[in-house]
Image (tube, rainbow, N blue to C red):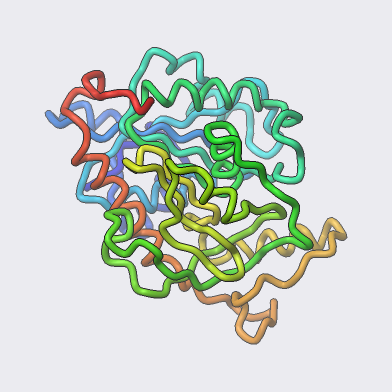
Length: 307
């Protein structure tokens, strides 16, 4: 089914070229159907690229989905034109009285900064509290996962010896969980971060379960009992060249970053990397949307709060 997006969103042209079904708001209004309502808190620096990656994954479900992009008012974005934010993004204040089936909180390149020193932390905390009563299921990605685990459960992050960057093999610890239906016994996912979460800290919280993990990257998919809060420590939404772009950016800044592991053929940055995680990423998002669909009513205002 198509993804309902705001008229004029730049991602539309890219997705149409990939034969991904999208639907502008003007056409969606003519259909008598209740799409799944998804809010996306996009705090990645390159917002346009992140929009495209997430919409690409959301398009894989047989459900029609409608997205609304959110951005913290307390954060001045340097990498996205103000006109783009004004046209396509809402603030938390503008959606405070609404309810959504799904919420996605993206990563952000601030993992080495204490949470309390991130300039939009208070606003993000307020939004995460609001999600308990106004969102059926929230998917947290990378730093968003660390932020959610810290805010909801008091689980601290820790600094890694060097940046964890690359594509790592993961194994399933709970094969019957509906989030992982259809997963291979071993699957791949990209990671790109300077901090991590210790497995033992997660295991001490009885409300959480580690669904899959990697020897190198640690816990990957973490969820509460009802999968109303899901934490993904990596970046399943990344495109083929995203890790390369980040690696090139870091080198240009003079940062001592390693070559992304298991990414370039022969670890040669001059060669085109293979994308080995896209099937897993599509299936993860499809399973998530299907779980939400099974657990929500036609009217999102009838949904039970997550608590």
